[in-house]
Structure formats: C-alpha cells, structure tokens
Amino acid sequence: MAHLRLPPADSIIEWHRHTWGQLACPRVGSIRVSAPGMMWIVPLWRAVWIPPGIDHQVVMLGHAEFHALYIDPGASPLPADACSVIEVSELMRVLTESLAHGMQGSSRHRTLAMQLLIEEVRRAPALPLGLPLPSERRLRALCTAMMEEPGSYRTLQDWARIVGASERTLARLFQSEVNTSFAIWRRQLRLSRAIDLIGRGVPLNEVAAELGYANAPAFSTMFRHALGFPPSQLANTSGARRP
Image 1 (cartoon, rainbow, N blue to C red):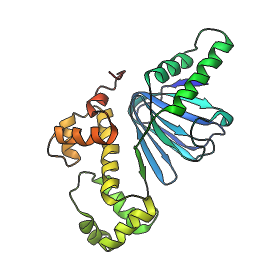
Image 2: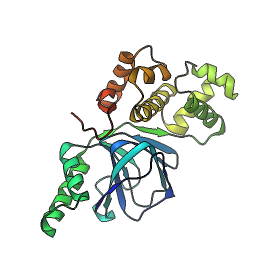
Image 3: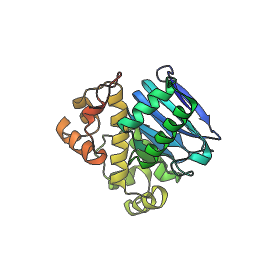
Image 4: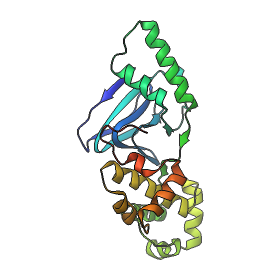
C-alpha cells in the first residue's frame, strides 16, 4: 500500500510505531527521522526504511511531501531490526508514484507492481546518512554542543577541556558508544545539517560557510565523496526530479 503525505511545513509526527514496515520517500524537501540512539536526514528521492515495531519520530524540514509505502512484515525487503536510508531508482520512483495515485489496472497488475517495487527496494544501495547519538553523559554533552555548532573548528582536544574529559577518554567513548571516530561523526553531522539547509533553499556558498568550509567547491567535494552525488542535486527541491 502506498500513500502521498502532504503534512504542514515544519510539522512533527510524534513518536509511534507500526506493526508493518514503512518506507518513507520525500518527493519535495527533506525529512528527519529519529529512532532510539539514531537520527537520519532523508533528502529528496531517497528513502528511509523503518522496520515493524521500531519507535520513531518524523520531522518535516520546512515544506516536505513524501510517499509512505506500507509493507507487510512477512514481505520486508530490508533488515527487520534497524532503520536505513537507501537510494531511490527511477523505477522505484515511478512505481511508488503510480501506486500512491491509484494505479489503474487489475488487482493482479497492482500486486505485480508492488512485488517489483519490493524487489527494487531490496536491491537498492544504502547511503551513509545515519547519525548515531550517544547515551554517555560527557559524550552526549559534546555531541549536543557540536549539533548546535556543526561548523566549529574545535579539535577533540579542545572539546575535551570543555566537557571535562581527556581526549583519550572521548576517543574511546566515540568508538564504544557510537562505533565511529570523532572526525567521521562530525562529517556525518555536517552532512545531515547540509541536507537540512539545502532542502530549505539556503545557497550552497552559505551552507559551506556555516559548516566550516572555505568555499562551496570544497564543501561540494566532501559531499560528493561521502554520498556519491553533488549537493546541487538537492538544491531545487520544490517538485524537483533527479537529472
């Protein structure tokens, strides 16, 4: 089953869970999805997979429209214990839009279309858009401060003095709490913030400046290297389609 959701700008779908799997795919703007210990920013024509039984919250980042695809647990195309963000192929997009708008044809026709869509979801590449959130007090304080200032030039040593822990302790906590390094977590934070800003129509040079990059080309290089597509692909989100 597929539906087109047209929520108010900046609205919030508060914490809830489903007995079915859900794939949420923005067709305008971006959304932020949170689950315990993790957050994802989902840009235009990508999709977040939310397995059955996972508590989650959905926030519209400005004006956003998205397709919601509901999948029976027995047909779940992706892991049943973790959310993830995937690339949306042109075929997935066409099938989702057709099903959401009441695809014409027989019941068998619609069933085959859904089966093909589920197979496309199963084969879709995953994107590194998740931002793990720690629970340890000192590391949580550091990450919260960084989320308020994603373009900060502070080193881990600088942050250690601020939160009252040694640099070595914080480096260990990053590995044990969020299974990554300080540098990679900061990059993921900046990517998440960039997608939010771009989806709101902020020019790329201003996005680059806010995130601590010398210029837009330097920021674009980092973005493309991390995600495999340029930030300009998200710059026109009002009904835009991927080239």
